[in-house]
Length: 167
Image (tube, helix red, strand yellow):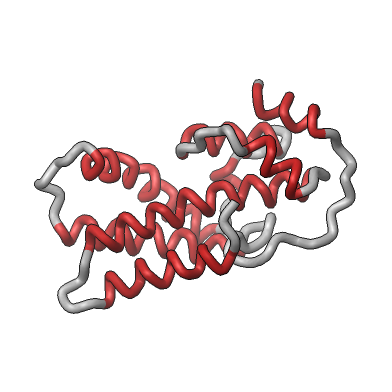
């Protein structure tokens, strides 16, 4: 599971790529997307800790999961007993969420070798991803770019977490 120092490094690299002259949209988007993928796991870990599992239990249960945006939303709802991801977002982040969903298509186009993407589109999308991640510091679960809360009372079993996730 990525630690906050690594997440901040990804964030800084994406910002640097966008700040160069000329801006490097492809690098910025790629690094910003890697940041978002790592933040998704951190958010699920924060949800698990709030619900009464330890960080180790969360890591073990989530290790084999392929967590794209759709699966992330499903897991968030399962772990938090039906809470809707979008409803949990701070207002500023909620407004940016549709852009994150649209960015999936851009990512697919890059991976499959489409050359007609446009550097401005890459830059704009990278900034949207970075803005979204920055807005998560106000999330009720906590800031994913900071350390996980140290104190967690193990109140739920490993099996109960796996049961919720596998449904």
